[in-house]
Length: 269
Image 1 (cartoon, rainbow, N blue to C red):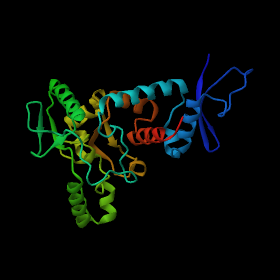
Image 2: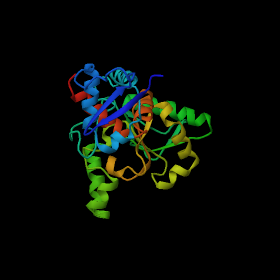
Image 3: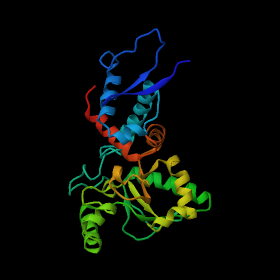
Image 4: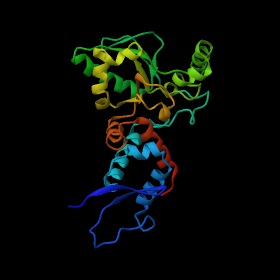
């Protein structure tokens, strides 16, 4: 029976399908151009990311990747990609505002914590779907934070620095220009406290969010990867295909997948 494995060759990483013992395995140089690109991109990933990727068939991985990239091309319009990598090393400018922001007001399908919330259209539509599904199960979601402008994030970060000091503030708050909230596709649910994940609402979101394209951004025990402490309430809309891809190939860690996609787009075939 043919098997496939993730092969680590010193500092290089190569997806390779096992062949019969009598056959020679192709080298990276002899491989298909997309396999070579996959090897190069994986080689550039962190050791923790490499360790998170399971054994698998490279052709299957590439097929799943193409589905994810095609979905994004169809859904983000002329705005930034829904997979745009924004973190402590990658940012957007102070003038960036998502296109077509839609106000997230109090509705029969959700509650809001304040009246100045908004999301980009793709995320708003997905939040509607998620909220209707939750309501069907007897849960009315609380939307506590959505899009934040550069200026708003600047004031928030400065306030946290004054309150807790820069070192601690940077563990739980983004500097302006580096927050997923500025992309208009992130939502903070509920009380924005650690115990929210244990509530009926929190448990439902954890169980069902990915089915509607919502991904937990800052999981527990990954501060060294994401740059931020665990935030059980913070979800980002990336679409259903990407949620499946993330779970299947990246140990369900959003940061690993987004870093991979970012590097994939930069590498020539």
